[in-house]
Length: 465
Image (cartoon, rainbow, N blue to C red; front, side, top):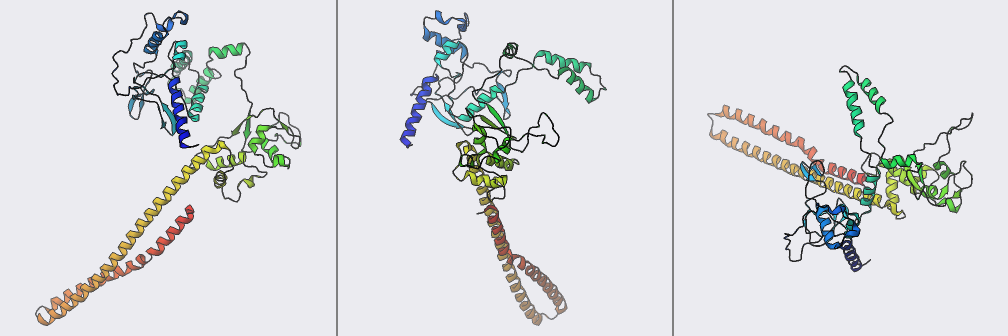
């Protein structure tokens, strides 16, 4: 895709955003003085008005925006949260004004910033707001990860605790004696609360009507990658008490072209697992969603990355024996890095490739910093070596000149000969000690070059540079 095509695609996206999300921008002249913001219409409340009885849809939309879409008040019970040592609105109000709609990045993800001339106005869609007649929030999401996080957040949101449960806790705490042991407290809590939770009205209706709590367009299959197996319901003497796992069936798959190059993930997705190894494999009508277990962190610097690399190799690289996954490497992490750099990897591993590139860049930066540090140390050693050599040279010159001056003085000054000889002796001993000390430093300084070469070689072998 050329730069021109990318630019036209971006312009089309922003134009589409402006058509869906209403949030007027600052005029081109920069004049954003708004003196005619309508007041909320609450007597009678605009939200209670029937859609069929509305004569002027434009004025009705103005009243809805003024009543439902402006974030006019922040409070600690709703939106004010402590962040980085100060109190901030968790929705980001007041928001900065913006003349046109643009795309930027926040926390490494692309974000659409719509145009706005009101820093307290919540973005909305006119059709949705007019039909819903209550507060709405319209955001244009261009990041897959943000969609996943948003859906997962609400899908896993827990039910709020009822006041009845809080009252139960209060009653238990009041009935506990001061000298009660911690075990007694826990026993009372478990006795009163075990097995109890809050049920929403929707869940209660589904249970009473015997309706399924959820429906899915795909089936889900849990794939164990740590070698664990399911225990049989019946036990027979001299027979295994565990059922063959999906991993066992995969390693025992037929040695034919159809199955030879298929990965474990595709094998589980596309084929039904028979009860006995060696039985015919039947294709599924629809691919299933595979959930690998156990979960390991994908952080290349984390303690679980070796196990994570092994799991990813098991899922995406065909094998019969686990040793084949190493491919001549010493660790699964190194083998996985080689696999990611091979180019023959599925698109689902794009995040792992990005994390690996970031980790390699950090390692290279660390190598450069260590090389710089060693070069600095080497320079200091060379400087010390040169300095000590100059000290030795100056010491020898001082001794020679001192002895010459002593010889001359001994001829001229005869009356203080004994005192002068004592001074000469002391001076000679001091100079000899200085020269001895400097000579002891020479072997250490001479070995600087060999030390630097050895350290540099070890560093290059460590980081393979």
